[in-house]
Length: 91
Image 1: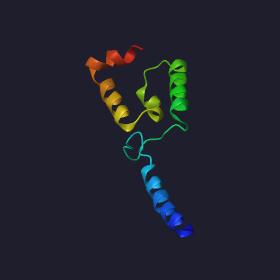
Image 2 (image 1 turned 90 degrees about the vertical axis):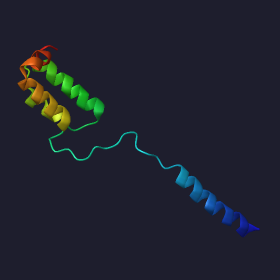
Image 3 (image 1 turned 180 degrees about the vertical axis):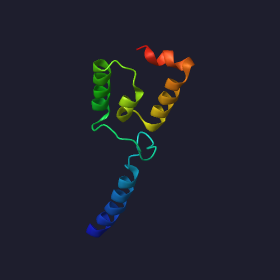
Image 4 (image 1 turned 90 degrees about the horizontal axis):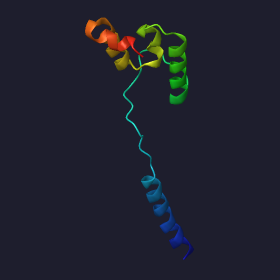
């Protein structure tokens, strides 16, 4: 009788461990080619806002470590476009 309980326990434990795997909350979009700021999302956001408060210039390249590659490209293209430049100058 002792072995029959053990033989039932092992498959149940394997089944439960297979059911409790956690899937990521977001899909990782690959490697980052630009330099990044160290820290978690809250820390990076705080550094970003502190930098924006201290440096009121509209130099998008200075904010590059805080932005994703796609967002940095989008903002850089918008800063060269006369129609969108006014949107970037107003905070």
